[in-house]
Every structure is written in C-alpha cells, then in structure tokens.
Length: 85
Image 1: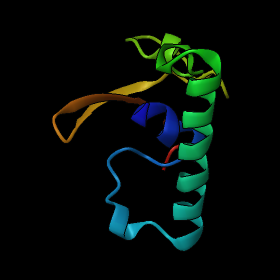
Image 2 (image 1 turned 45 degrees about the vertical axis):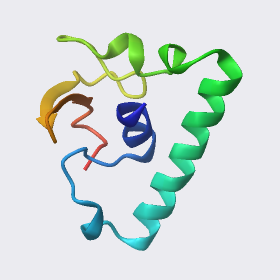
Image 3 (image 1 turned 30 degrees about the vertical axis):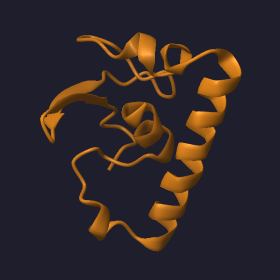
C-alpha cells in the first residue's frame, strides 16, 4: 500500500517527509485517501494498480518506465524513476 500511495503522489520512497513541500504533502495525503478508498472498494490491497508490476523487470502502469527496486527503512520498495522524485 505504501508503494502505491507514493507512486500515485509522485514521491520517491527515500525522501524524508520533513523535506516535502506543502503541495507535495497535500498530494501525498490525497493519494493515501485514494489508495485506501480503492482498496476498500475493490477488495483489498492486492488489486491496487501498482501491485502486479512490483517485481524485477516490472514497468510503471502510468508511463511504461522500468520500475526500480530499493530498500528503504528495511523494506523493499518499487518505484518509477520517470515520475517519482
């Protein structure tokens, strides 16, 4: 769910929250609400748009860029280098 929320908001998973601008925090908040709403509506987090692409060689469903894989805070994360900064 974290990967999908950050992907929707266009925020790189390694960015500390205290460096996000006001508009970025608002975008992140809206993305979190949208992610939760979709998960509740559609039957769980396994149906979120990024989930089937979260694998080595997976591509961003938004722009087709190859997803990158990193470790942040001890967990594996997948993110799109084309639009998550």
